[in-house]
Amino acid sequence: MPSQKPKIAIVGAGIGGLTLWHALRARGLDADLFEQAHELAEIGAAVALSANATRELGRLGLLDAVVAASTEPTELVYRDGRSGARIAAHPMRLGGAYRQRFGAPYCGVHRADLQRALSAGVAPDRLHLGRRLVGLDEREGAVTLTFADGGSVSADVVIAADGVRSVARRHVVGDDGLLYSGTSGFRGIVPIDRLPSLPDPQAIQFWMGPSAHLLHYAIGGDAGHVNFLAVVEAPRAWPHAERGLAPSSAAEALAFFEGWHPAVTEMIAAVAHEARWGLFLAHPLPRWRRGRVALLGDAAHAMLPHHGQGANTTIEDAVTVAELFAAQDGDVNGALAAYEALRRPRTRAIQRASWAGNRALHLPDGATAARDALIAAFPEQFGWIHAFDALAAAKAPLRSAARSATR
Image (cartoon, rainbow, N blue to C red; front, side, top):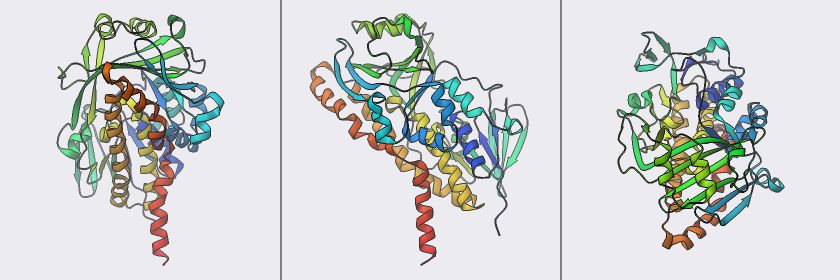
């Protein structure tokens, strides 16, 4: 006889939490979402969704709305940051190359548009806003979540998708678990018409130079804006360990890119840059779960953005958790153990690849030949990231167990 369905609490209503809610609902499971913000309003940044995530959104019936609000890049282009010369280029939308290779699209989308697409259809009585988690306590097979407003709830299992500076991660591993990378970033979204020097505006492009690079891609259904991240190797130590932002200015941002191509400096100068982002990653955690509390997305495996996989691996996590919960038929511990075993090796490999990617993008002038050879090989070297099928990976051990049981 089937076990009673577990009472599931999801902490965080960002990309991971919302995707998990839909993935659970698609499998006949309910969950409550607890979000610290008082409204779902993502601002100021965009997301690049690769095939390993968009194929899962398609399976959940969420992809059409995302594609309608997105730009699919024409190419992936690597350029010298100062001369603007094309070092390597690989077709994406052109000739349908990316979809043919990976079976799903690559989308540049504003976070607010993505959040609207993911939050559509979430039952209002299951979404609890203004609930900032401050504590977790597990006793006798139940977890109590305590919130800053003084309230608390109980659940059979907690999936914490509460981001880079996760409260739940401290509960699971006992410390913050974050490592400053020695790099920081300046971000912005700029209308295309303010970038007269920008070649190939609908391509995803990396502009590379010593100790810095700039990545950008077009977003929106009309490709009318460009989202960028300019990464620099500074400061040596982050001044605010408890915060990911530090005060800055446009003059400070531009100083790192003096002498670079006008397309780069126009892009950076178009934004006020009142803050810069410290780029942090999670130490390889000794565990992702403690009892009936498990981490998901950046809470478990925050990574550098140089392969654009933070949001994508979070979506993979969500689909994996939902599939295992449905298959384990109420066995919470079995589902969480299988989830951790499946997801840790892949996300750790991508963390390492992102760290290596930072070094390749920032090689000094004397090493440009080596850099160019590395860059030209990137699409083949890292195609495994995009080709991954999270649902198939989650089903594989289940099929293997079923075969063993019938022998």
